[in-house]
Image (cartoon, rainbow, N blue to C red; front, side, top):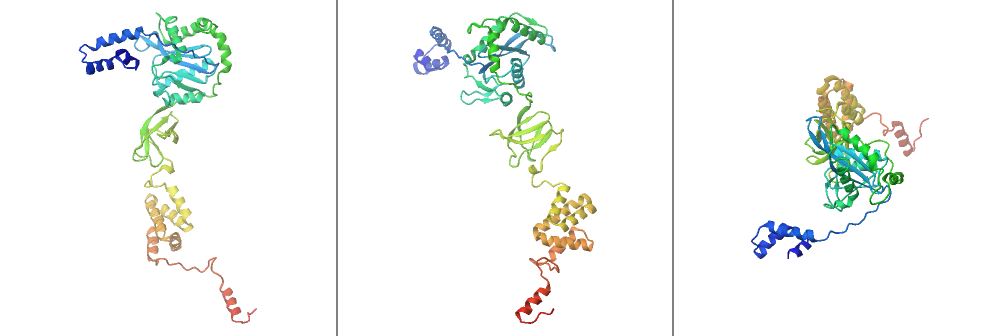
Length: 425
Protein backbone atom coordinates (compact mmCIF):
# COMPACT_ATOMS: atom_id res chain seq x y z
CA UNK A 1 0.00 0.00 0.00
CA UNK A 2 2.88 2.38 0.76
CA UNK A 3 4.50 1.72 -2.60
CA UNK A 4 1.20 2.28 -4.37
CA UNK A 5 0.66 5.56 -2.47
CA UNK A 6 4.14 6.78 -3.39
CA UNK A 7 3.33 6.09 -7.01
CA UNK A 8 0.33 8.42 -6.70
CA UNK A 9 2.53 11.20 -5.32
CA UNK A 10 1.57 10.87 -1.62
CA UNK A 11 4.17 12.02 0.92
CA UNK A 12 5.25 10.21 4.09
CA UNK A 13 2.99 12.21 6.41
CA UNK A 14 -0.11 11.51 4.33
CA UNK A 15 0.73 7.80 4.17
CA UNK A 16 1.26 7.71 7.97
CA UNK A 17 -2.13 9.32 8.58
CA UNK A 18 -3.85 6.83 6.23
CA UNK A 19 -2.20 3.92 8.09
CA UNK A 20 -3.38 5.21 11.44
CA UNK A 21 -6.95 5.92 10.32
CA UNK A 22 -7.50 2.90 8.06
CA UNK A 23 -5.35 0.15 9.55
CA UNK A 24 -4.82 1.07 13.20
CA UNK A 25 -1.07 1.62 12.79
CA UNK A 26 0.43 1.93 16.30
CA UNK A 27 3.98 3.07 15.48
CA UNK A 28 5.28 6.60 15.08
CA UNK A 29 5.67 8.72 11.97
CA UNK A 30 9.47 8.28 11.99
CA UNK A 31 9.09 4.59 11.14
CA UNK A 32 7.05 5.37 8.04
CA UNK A 33 9.42 8.16 7.01
CA UNK A 34 12.51 5.91 7.25
CA UNK A 35 10.81 3.22 5.18
CA UNK A 36 9.70 5.76 2.55
CA UNK A 37 13.29 7.08 2.32
CA UNK A 38 14.61 3.58 1.59
CA UNK A 39 12.06 3.12 -1.19
CA UNK A 40 12.94 6.47 -2.76
CA UNK A 41 16.67 5.70 -2.70
CA UNK A 42 16.07 2.34 -4.30
CA UNK A 43 14.05 3.83 -7.15
CA UNK A 44 16.16 4.77 -10.21
CA UNK A 45 16.31 8.50 -11.06
CA UNK A 46 14.45 9.82 -14.06
CA UNK A 47 16.36 10.79 -17.17
CA UNK A 48 16.52 14.50 -17.89
CA UNK A 49 16.22 15.76 -21.47
CA UNK A 50 18.97 17.83 -23.06
CA UNK A 51 17.82 21.36 -23.89
CA UNK A 52 19.52 22.66 -27.02
CA UNK A 53 19.21 26.38 -27.75
CA UNK A 54 20.19 28.43 -30.77
CA UNK A 55 22.69 31.30 -30.52
CA UNK A 56 21.11 34.30 -28.80
CA UNK A 57 17.92 32.41 -27.98
CA UNK A 58 18.10 31.92 -24.21
CA UNK A 59 19.89 33.00 -21.07
CA UNK A 60 19.54 31.45 -17.62
CA UNK A 61 19.86 33.33 -14.33
CA UNK A 62 20.19 32.26 -10.72
CA UNK A 63 21.51 33.20 -7.30
CA UNK A 64 24.16 31.34 -5.29
CA UNK A 65 26.34 31.86 -2.24
CA UNK A 66 29.46 33.94 -2.64
CA UNK A 67 32.63 34.09 -0.55
CA UNK A 68 33.09 35.55 2.92
CA UNK A 69 33.76 39.30 2.79
CA UNK A 70 34.40 41.77 5.60
CA UNK A 71 31.37 44.01 5.95
CA UNK A 72 32.26 47.74 5.83
CA UNK A 73 29.88 48.66 8.67
CA UNK A 74 30.21 45.81 11.17
CA UNK A 75 33.81 44.83 10.38
CA UNK A 76 32.84 41.14 10.50
CA UNK A 77 33.02 38.59 7.71
CA UNK A 78 29.70 38.00 6.04
CA UNK A 79 28.54 35.73 3.25
CA UNK A 80 27.80 37.52 -0.04
CA UNK A 81 25.32 36.63 -2.76
CA UNK A 82 26.53 35.41 -6.14
CA UNK A 83 24.54 36.37 -9.25
CA UNK A 84 25.09 34.34 -12.42
CA UNK A 85 23.77 34.91 -15.92
CA UNK A 86 24.64 32.12 -18.37
CA UNK A 87 23.95 32.02 -22.10
CA UNK A 88 22.36 28.76 -23.22
CA UNK A 89 24.37 28.24 -26.41
CA UNK A 90 27.94 29.22 -25.54
CA UNK A 91 27.78 28.77 -21.71
CA UNK A 92 29.35 32.21 -21.37
CA UNK A 93 28.62 33.44 -17.83
CA UNK A 94 28.59 36.79 -16.07
CA UNK A 95 29.36 36.56 -12.35
CA UNK A 96 28.45 39.46 -10.06
CA UNK A 97 28.47 39.71 -6.26
CA UNK A 98 26.26 41.78 -3.98
CA UNK A 99 25.52 42.12 -0.27
CA UNK A 100 21.78 41.71 -0.46
CA UNK A 101 18.95 41.27 -2.92
CA UNK A 102 15.83 43.25 -3.73
CA UNK A 103 13.63 43.71 -6.76
CA UNK A 104 15.68 46.70 -7.90
CA UNK A 105 19.06 45.04 -7.25
CA UNK A 106 17.86 41.96 -9.13
CA UNK A 107 16.91 44.12 -12.13
CA UNK A 108 20.14 46.17 -11.97
CA UNK A 109 22.22 42.97 -12.00
CA UNK A 110 20.43 41.94 -15.19
CA UNK A 111 21.31 45.28 -16.75
CA UNK A 112 24.97 44.88 -15.79
CA UNK A 113 24.99 41.38 -17.28
CA UNK A 114 23.46 42.63 -20.55
CA UNK A 115 26.07 45.39 -20.81
CA UNK A 116 28.93 42.96 -20.15
CA UNK A 117 27.63 40.58 -22.79
CA UNK A 118 27.11 43.40 -25.29
CA UNK A 119 23.55 42.31 -26.10
CA UNK A 120 20.44 40.55 -24.84
CA UNK A 121 18.99 37.07 -25.48
CA UNK A 122 15.40 36.51 -26.48
CA UNK A 123 14.41 34.57 -23.32
CA UNK A 124 15.52 34.48 -19.69
CA UNK A 125 14.86 31.31 -17.66
CA UNK A 126 14.69 31.92 -13.91
CA UNK A 127 13.49 30.49 -10.63
CA UNK A 128 10.32 31.62 -8.90
CA UNK A 129 12.06 33.93 -6.43
CA UNK A 130 10.07 36.96 -5.27
CA UNK A 131 12.42 39.44 -6.96
CA UNK A 132 11.26 38.10 -10.32
CA UNK A 133 7.96 36.25 -9.85
CA UNK A 134 5.18 37.31 -7.48
CA UNK A 135 2.80 34.39 -8.11
CA UNK A 136 4.29 31.18 -9.55
CA UNK A 137 2.21 29.54 -12.26
CA UNK A 138 3.52 27.36 -15.04
CA UNK A 139 0.89 28.70 -17.46
CA UNK A 140 0.42 32.34 -16.43
CA UNK A 141 2.92 33.53 -13.78
CA UNK A 142 2.60 37.03 -12.29
CA UNK A 143 5.94 38.78 -12.71
CA UNK A 144 7.33 41.45 -10.43
CA UNK A 145 6.24 44.76 -12.06
CA UNK A 146 9.70 46.35 -11.93
CA UNK A 147 11.41 43.24 -13.31
CA UNK A 148 8.78 42.92 -16.02
CA UNK A 149 9.25 46.54 -17.14
CA UNK A 150 13.05 46.24 -17.16
CA UNK A 151 12.92 43.15 -19.38
CA UNK A 152 10.37 44.86 -21.65
CA UNK A 153 12.72 47.86 -21.95
CA UNK A 154 15.47 45.51 -23.20
CA UNK A 155 13.14 43.38 -25.33
CA UNK A 156 13.55 40.20 -23.29
CA UNK A 157 10.83 37.70 -22.31
CA UNK A 158 10.90 36.03 -18.86
CA UNK A 159 10.34 32.26 -18.72
CA UNK A 160 9.89 31.13 -15.08
CA UNK A 161 10.51 27.45 -14.41
CA UNK A 162 8.01 25.04 -12.95
CA UNK A 163 8.07 25.05 -9.15
CA UNK A 164 10.66 22.62 -7.73
CA UNK A 165 12.04 21.88 -11.21
CA UNK A 166 15.41 23.67 -11.34
CA UNK A 167 16.69 21.28 -14.02
CA UNK A 168 15.01 23.49 -16.64
CA UNK A 169 17.89 25.91 -16.10
CA UNK A 170 20.56 23.31 -15.46
CA UNK A 171 23.24 25.27 -17.34
CA UNK A 172 23.28 28.14 -14.85
CA UNK A 173 22.86 25.68 -11.96
CA UNK A 174 26.03 23.95 -13.12
CA UNK A 175 27.80 27.31 -13.41
CA UNK A 176 26.82 28.22 -9.84
CA UNK A 177 28.24 24.97 -8.52
CA UNK A 178 31.41 25.34 -10.58
CA UNK A 179 31.96 28.86 -9.26
CA UNK A 180 31.38 27.91 -5.65
CA UNK A 181 33.70 24.87 -5.83
CA UNK A 182 36.59 26.24 -7.87
CA UNK A 183 37.37 29.96 -7.43
CA UNK A 184 35.45 30.82 -4.23
CA UNK A 185 35.77 27.82 -1.92
CA UNK A 186 37.84 28.70 1.14
CA UNK A 187 38.41 32.29 0.00
CA UNK A 188 37.96 35.46 2.08
CA UNK A 189 38.10 39.04 0.87
CA UNK A 190 38.41 42.37 2.61
CA UNK A 191 35.91 44.16 0.37
CA UNK A 192 33.22 43.42 -2.17
CA UNK A 193 35.31 45.06 -4.88
CA UNK A 194 38.18 42.63 -4.18
CA UNK A 195 35.89 39.63 -4.64
CA UNK A 196 34.45 41.04 -7.87
CA UNK A 197 37.93 41.79 -9.26
CA UNK A 198 39.07 38.26 -8.39
CA UNK A 199 36.04 36.74 -10.15
CA UNK A 200 36.55 38.92 -13.25
CA UNK A 201 40.20 37.85 -13.48
CA UNK A 202 39.29 34.20 -13.02
CA UNK A 203 36.51 34.49 -15.60
CA UNK A 204 38.90 35.84 -18.23
CA UNK A 205 41.84 33.57 -17.41
CA UNK A 206 40.15 30.25 -16.76
CA UNK A 207 36.37 30.15 -17.27
CA UNK A 208 36.34 31.59 -20.81
CA UNK A 209 39.34 29.59 -22.00
CA UNK A 210 38.21 26.18 -20.70
CA UNK A 211 36.87 23.38 -22.87
CA UNK A 212 33.27 22.88 -21.78
CA UNK A 213 32.44 19.35 -20.69
CA UNK A 214 29.22 19.09 -22.71
CA UNK A 215 29.95 21.04 -25.89
CA UNK A 216 33.63 19.94 -26.06
CA UNK A 217 34.51 23.38 -27.33
CA UNK A 218 36.12 26.48 -25.86
CA UNK A 219 33.64 28.85 -24.23
CA UNK A 220 35.19 32.04 -25.70
CA UNK A 221 35.05 30.62 -29.24
CA UNK A 222 31.38 29.72 -28.90
CA UNK A 223 30.62 33.10 -27.38
CA UNK A 224 32.22 34.80 -30.39
CA UNK A 225 29.73 32.87 -32.54
CA UNK A 226 26.77 33.74 -30.30
CA UNK A 227 27.38 37.43 -29.64
CA UNK A 228 26.30 38.64 -33.13
CA UNK A 229 22.97 36.84 -32.57
CA UNK A 230 22.22 38.74 -29.36
CA UNK A 231 19.67 41.53 -29.47
CA UNK A 232 20.90 45.16 -29.45
CA UNK A 233 21.03 47.18 -26.26
CA UNK A 234 18.61 50.16 -26.01
CA UNK A 235 20.01 53.66 -26.41
CA UNK A 236 19.06 54.73 -22.89
CA UNK A 237 19.14 52.72 -19.65
CA UNK A 238 15.97 51.90 -17.81
CA UNK A 239 14.59 54.63 -15.54
CA UNK A 240 13.97 52.91 -12.22
CA UNK A 241 10.95 53.65 -10.09
CA UNK A 242 9.39 52.62 -6.83
CA UNK A 243 6.01 51.00 -6.78
CA UNK A 244 3.27 50.17 -4.32
CA UNK A 245 -0.46 50.44 -3.75
CA UNK A 246 -2.33 53.48 -2.46
CA UNK A 247 -5.96 54.06 -1.44
CA UNK A 248 -7.87 56.92 -3.08
CA UNK A 249 -9.10 59.16 -0.25
CA UNK A 250 -12.30 61.21 -0.07
CA UNK A 251 -10.61 64.16 -1.77
CA UNK A 252 -9.95 61.95 -4.82
CA UNK A 253 -6.18 61.86 -4.24
CA UNK A 254 -3.55 59.31 -3.27
CA UNK A 255 -0.61 60.17 -1.02
CA UNK A 256 2.96 59.53 -2.14
CA UNK A 257 5.85 60.75 0.06
CA UNK A 258 3.66 63.36 1.73
CA UNK A 259 2.26 64.85 -1.51
CA UNK A 260 -1.19 64.31 -3.01
CA UNK A 261 -2.03 63.30 -6.58
CA UNK A 262 -5.51 63.02 -8.04
CA UNK A 263 -7.12 59.93 -9.53
CA UNK A 264 -9.86 60.03 -12.19
CA UNK A 265 -13.42 60.51 -10.88
CA UNK A 266 -15.13 57.36 -9.63
CA UNK A 267 -12.11 55.80 -7.86
CA UNK A 268 -12.71 56.99 -4.29
CA UNK A 269 -12.04 54.13 -1.86
CA UNK A 270 -10.29 51.94 -4.42
CA UNK A 271 -6.72 50.66 -4.09
CA UNK A 272 -4.61 51.60 -7.13
CA UNK A 273 -1.06 50.54 -8.12
CA UNK A 274 1.25 53.55 -8.08
CA UNK A 275 4.73 54.09 -9.56
CA UNK A 276 7.03 57.02 -8.71
CA UNK A 277 10.65 57.91 -9.44
CA UNK A 278 11.20 61.43 -8.03
CA UNK A 279 10.14 63.08 -11.30
CA UNK A 280 6.73 61.64 -12.13
CA UNK A 281 3.96 59.76 -10.34
CA UNK A 282 1.90 57.27 -12.35
CA UNK A 283 -1.46 55.84 -11.27
CA UNK A 284 -2.44 52.53 -12.90
CA UNK A 285 -5.66 50.59 -13.21
CA UNK A 286 -5.79 47.72 -10.73
CA UNK A 287 -7.30 45.26 -13.22
CA UNK A 288 -5.76 46.08 -16.57
CA UNK A 289 -2.55 47.84 -15.55
CA UNK A 290 -3.26 50.71 -17.94
CA UNK A 291 -2.09 54.22 -17.12
CA UNK A 292 -4.83 56.33 -15.50
CA UNK A 293 -2.94 59.51 -14.61
CA UNK A 294 0.64 60.75 -14.77
CA UNK A 295 1.59 63.71 -12.58
CA UNK A 296 4.74 65.73 -12.07
CA UNK A 297 6.49 65.33 -8.74
CA UNK A 298 5.25 67.68 -6.00
CA UNK A 299 6.75 68.86 -2.70
CA UNK A 300 5.42 67.51 0.57
CA UNK A 301 1.98 68.83 1.44
CA UNK A 302 1.23 69.99 -2.12
CA UNK A 303 -1.66 68.83 -4.31
CA UNK A 304 -1.60 67.96 -7.99
CA UNK A 305 -5.18 68.02 -9.31
CA UNK A 306 -5.96 68.82 -12.97
CA UNK A 307 -9.29 70.56 -13.69
CA UNK A 308 -10.94 67.39 -15.05
CA UNK A 309 -10.30 65.58 -11.74
CA UNK A 310 -11.68 68.25 -9.43
CA UNK A 311 -14.86 67.28 -7.54
CA UNK A 312 -18.03 69.16 -8.43
CA UNK A 313 -18.10 70.89 -5.06
CA UNK A 314 -14.59 72.28 -5.48
CA UNK A 315 -14.74 76.11 -5.84
CA UNK A 316 -13.33 77.15 -9.23
CA UNK A 317 -10.43 79.55 -9.52
CA UNK A 318 -11.24 83.22 -10.01
CA UNK A 319 -9.70 83.44 -13.48
CA UNK A 320 -11.69 80.42 -14.65
CA UNK A 321 -14.85 81.87 -13.13
CA UNK A 322 -14.45 85.24 -14.90
CA UNK A 323 -13.75 83.47 -18.19
CA UNK A 324 -16.94 81.48 -17.72
CA UNK A 325 -18.98 84.66 -17.17
CA UNK A 326 -17.49 86.27 -20.28
CA UNK A 327 -18.61 83.28 -22.34
CA UNK A 328 -22.14 83.56 -20.91
CA UNK A 329 -22.64 87.11 -22.20
CA UNK A 330 -20.89 90.42 -22.78
CA UNK A 331 -22.85 92.35 -20.17
CA UNK A 332 -22.67 89.45 -17.69
CA UNK A 333 -18.89 89.29 -18.05
CA UNK A 334 -18.49 93.06 -17.67
CA UNK A 335 -20.71 93.15 -14.57
CA UNK A 336 -18.93 90.21 -12.90
CA UNK A 337 -15.53 91.77 -13.62
CA UNK A 338 -16.72 95.01 -12.00
CA UNK A 339 -18.00 93.05 -8.96
CA UNK A 340 -14.62 91.35 -8.55
CA UNK A 341 -12.76 94.66 -8.82
CA UNK A 342 -15.00 96.28 -6.22
CA UNK A 343 -15.46 93.47 -3.67
CA UNK A 344 -12.33 91.33 -4.13
CA UNK A 345 -12.47 87.75 -2.71
CA UNK A 346 -15.93 88.40 -1.22
CA UNK A 347 -17.27 89.08 -4.70
CA UNK A 348 -16.56 85.51 -5.86
CA UNK A 349 -19.75 84.27 -4.23
CA UNK A 350 -21.71 87.11 -5.81
CA UNK A 351 -20.33 86.15 -9.21
CA UNK A 352 -21.49 82.60 -8.58
CA UNK A 353 -24.88 84.07 -7.71
CA UNK A 354 -25.07 85.86 -11.08
CA UNK A 355 -24.32 82.56 -12.86
CA UNK A 356 -27.00 80.86 -10.76
CA UNK A 357 -29.50 83.55 -11.87
CA UNK A 358 -28.57 82.87 -15.51
CA UNK A 359 -29.31 79.21 -14.95
CA UNK A 360 -32.65 79.99 -13.29
CA UNK A 361 -34.07 82.84 -15.37
CA UNK A 362 -32.19 82.32 -18.61
CA UNK A 363 -29.20 84.07 -20.13
CA UNK A 364 -31.19 86.74 -22.10
CA UNK A 365 -32.98 87.96 -18.98
CA UNK A 366 -29.79 88.14 -16.92
CA UNK A 367 -27.92 89.73 -19.84
CA UNK A 368 -30.55 92.47 -20.01
CA UNK A 369 -30.44 92.93 -16.24
CA UNK A 370 -26.65 93.24 -16.25
CA UNK A 371 -26.79 95.73 -19.11
CA UNK A 372 -29.31 97.83 -17.19
CA UNK A 373 -27.19 97.63 -14.03
CA UNK A 374 -24.13 98.87 -15.93
CA UNK A 375 -26.11 101.74 -17.50
CA UNK A 376 -27.41 102.79 -14.08
CA UNK A 377 -23.96 102.46 -12.49
CA UNK A 378 -25.16 99.87 -9.95
CA UNK A 379 -22.85 96.87 -10.56
CA UNK A 380 -24.21 94.63 -7.79
CA UNK A 381 -25.61 91.15 -7.59
CA UNK A 382 -28.59 92.39 -5.57
CA UNK A 383 -29.74 94.72 -8.38
CA UNK A 384 -29.56 91.92 -10.96
CA UNK A 385 -31.48 89.55 -8.70
CA UNK A 386 -34.29 92.06 -8.05
CA UNK A 387 -34.49 92.90 -11.73
CA UNK A 388 -34.91 89.23 -12.62
CA UNK A 389 -37.44 88.64 -9.82
CA UNK A 390 -39.68 91.50 -11.05
CA UNK A 391 -39.74 90.26 -14.61
CA UNK A 392 -42.90 88.27 -15.43
CA UNK A 393 -42.38 84.61 -16.12
CA UNK A 394 -41.66 84.10 -19.77
CA UNK A 395 -41.80 87.86 -20.52
CA UNK A 396 -39.81 89.15 -23.42
CA UNK A 397 -38.02 92.47 -23.26
CA UNK A 398 -38.91 95.07 -25.90
CA UNK A 399 -36.26 96.38 -28.19
CA UNK A 400 -36.28 99.28 -30.62
CA UNK A 401 -33.63 97.87 -32.90
CA UNK A 402 -33.19 94.21 -33.64
CA UNK A 403 -32.22 92.17 -36.74
CA UNK A 404 -35.66 90.53 -36.65
CA UNK A 405 -37.54 93.88 -36.53
CA UNK A 406 -38.15 95.42 -39.96
CA UNK A 407 -38.51 99.13 -40.66
CA UNK A 408 -42.03 100.60 -40.41
CA UNK A 409 -41.86 101.94 -43.99
CA UNK A 410 -41.77 98.37 -45.29
CA UNK A 411 -45.02 97.59 -43.51
CA UNK A 412 -46.54 100.84 -44.92
CA UNK A 413 -45.63 99.88 -48.48
CA UNK A 414 -47.08 96.41 -48.01
CA UNK A 415 -50.38 97.83 -46.74
CA UNK A 416 -50.60 100.27 -49.63
CA UNK A 417 -50.14 97.52 -52.21
CA UNK A 418 -52.89 95.41 -50.71
CA UNK A 419 -55.29 98.43 -50.65
CA UNK A 420 -54.44 99.44 -54.26
CA UNK A 421 -53.16 102.85 -53.22
CA UNK A 422 -50.42 104.61 -55.04
CA UNK A 423 -47.16 104.64 -53.28
CA UNK A 424 -45.84 108.22 -53.08
CA UNK A 425 -42.47 108.78 -54.59
